[in-house]
Length: 131
Image (cartoon, rainbow, N blue to C red; front, side, top):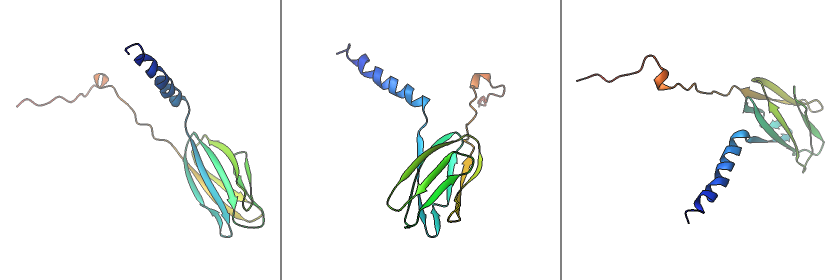
């Protein structure tokens, strides 16, 4: 029994280490309606890979073009098209369809990474008062 236990943990360790290398993909669904895109505004983090799924409720064909990225998706009723894009820098990017005059925006936010300090390297270490 003690020889089997280490072999059970090796696959778990490999899975945990592999998970650190790859970031998950954010999946976003967009529907084209007669009022425009739904949702009209999206938020993602800098460096995040995004997978778009686009469909339409309208009989006439529409599209979705993302500014500054190589994304062009057809939006047809009853069909779902998909594409991926990675947003490497923070800012605001428009998505639109020139034929229907519909538009929206993608806000790319900077990811906050807290600064970690080692207590032994700090010069102003807190010490308790003596009573």
